[in-house]
Image 1 (cartoon, rainbow, N blue to C red):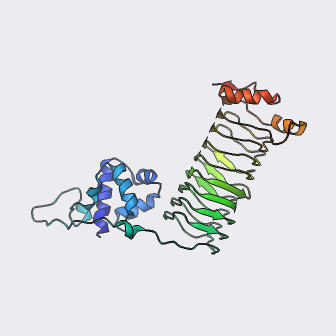
Image 2 (spheres, helix red, strand yellow):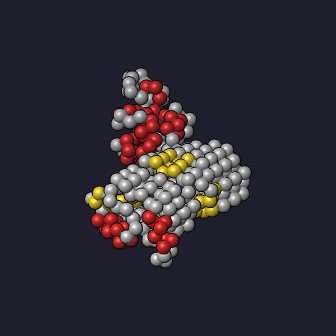
Image 3 (cartoon, rainbow, N blue to C red):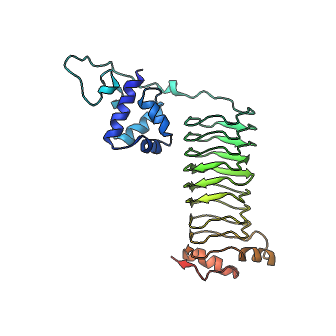
Length: 309
């Protein structure tokens, strides 16, 4: 296949839609560098991505196999009378795009560069991953089991249906990561989630002390049985979230928005559990009536500065 012709077509359609390479990459959950490589003819999308590209760029899938001048630089000028049209470029067969399973178990992968890779259902078990770079990668369905992923970068990574089990994520970065149906069972503290929408995610029985959440949105997230002592959730949005039987001593929800959020005390009804809940701050928070009523029923939470919505 002529990858330069394909790249020229992608560039032309992208510009027609007034999209930058970074914007197109965001729609596809990949890195802008990957889009740049396509348009320069250095690599090519797989068959699944071609279909997504067609939808995003508003073209028919056959657009990528229609004739174009051989020179990618001529894409905007059209054929001259003396120019012979290039041969039809066939799309790759689905069988050619089937990913080979690569064994990444118990391999030293510290500081490895996985930026922009596509690895579905990958298995990282007992693999040192400290400082590894997964930025912009598509890791859908992958598992990280008993892994040291300290200081790893998952910025812009598609982590849909991924599982982190007994994984040390100290100082790991999750900026604009895609966290959908993702489960975390983390050891170590201090992972940083920035501008992340967590959807149907599970963080059960997890130590989240010193974990940082900035400009995040939580939808149907389960924090049950977590250690959230001292966590800052100020100004964040929670919908359908469970904090059942979690340690929340000195946690702050100042200015947060809470709808249909459940707080069940971590112990039986004892002075200890009530005193712990009393240290949680909801000053300036917005709450729906059900969340407000349930918290008010505990009788120890200061809701005097809460607004009911």
